[in-house]
Image (tube, rainbow, N blue to C red; front, side):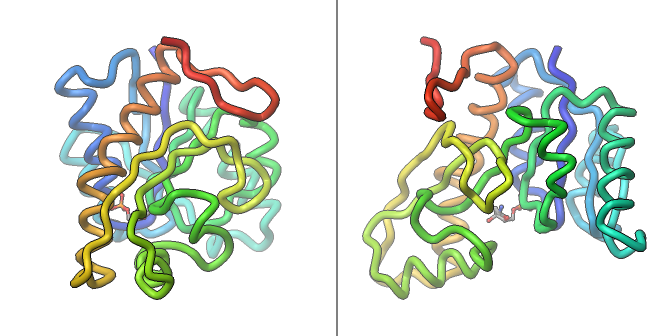
Length: 208
Ligand code: GRF
């Protein structure tokens, strides 16, 4: 059983997709030990509570330095015996100390086909605004390992989604979530939990 901690900041629809996929058996060998948010009013925490999963709020604002925040995050992750950390709509920069400690065990869902429309400032609706401004005909979502850069870690899974002429950023975001994010995040967690993922020359390979 892979002890998993999910970090969230907002609505938690990706968290919900993971919870539902565990419940319906699409994801196996995973136990979500806790959901941690930097926002105490994040709806994702309500989703966790409704499912009997412990929710915590840990915000950088509650600590005098980044170092103290990093130490607090590390202590909590270790306290839950985290073997996998899932960033699901988490908008705080993960301290390098945490990334180093959990090298190869932190994954993130990004709402575009990396390396397009990603990096600093590309989060939430900003991503879809950028896709529409550029006139992309296809976008999608990416699950990747988290390294010390921003959206630069090895790519695990991607799924393409059509961009339609009359899309607004909100309509496009919803389609990317429904058709891509909510599928590939649980799939990636299941692959990792069942030891199907490995990295060769910084490229992710999937065992069939
Ligand atoms: C989603 O667009 C996701 O791709 C991004 O954060 C947004 C909110 O996700 N990472 P959620 O509903 O909080 O899971």
